[in-house]
Length: 328
Image 1: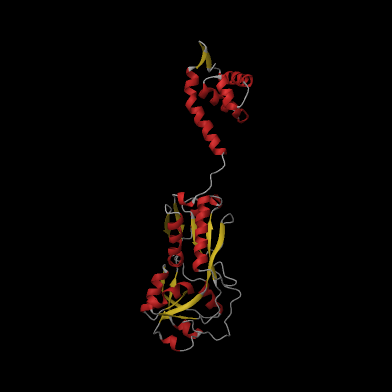
Image 2: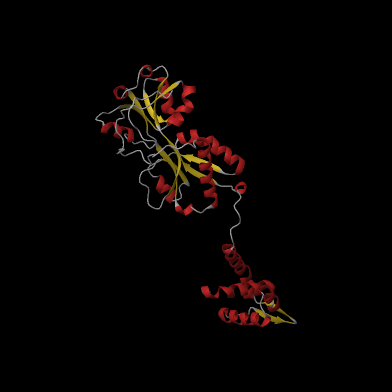
């Protein structure tokens, strides 16, 4: 049937379910003559009488009997499509979400996200997978649902929202020789360094800043995990430049000292990233809100003018003339 004749399909369903013109008219809220007129149109369209007299009543023809179930299924599905969506109830959400994130995100937010979900949506399953350069493609192609990280140029259609901010500090073992004096840029570049590279790429913002000053650091270990880097720093004389939030959390258990970097490094922002296809999906909106609430609980303080990417030279950076103080 043509789109304009969908009303006839609804009328046909009423006739097939009721088996009489009078019953169909009552179901449709029409007069009996109006329903009879609709039946005449349907008969012409289908080339079948559909209802025939049998004694004092009417019976369905074989064609009508064959159409009864499929027509009802089509009409029912169409009505459900046009019905207003029922209110979202988090406790009824039973769904698996795939989330790109580093062990830094899991260490800072993981337990809080877990607590919120256990309390409000216990049937939700989260599968965390590593960040990759292909995160936007996977989000677009439905290979994943959400990404948390620091991104440079994203495809124009992607949605994002700032989740939390952080800043860089230098991390060394507590008995490291550099903790006994003022930490200078000369000392910094003279050390062997650990680099955390979750996506496997060498270099980055810190090396760009050093290059601006005409110096370079020696990276002897590049690892994809923040916790591995912290353990290496605790057991060697390597220096690590990383997130202050994570470093502070494990400074005590791992016997680490945190030092101010001997050059100006801007803070940075982590963002939630998703594809617009799930922008209005109630379950996805709930998940994004869970991450935002978790970040508000454990990382609610914000740093001014954070960077949104770590792979380009900071044009505002310049060697600070202020004396650097030790954080811990």
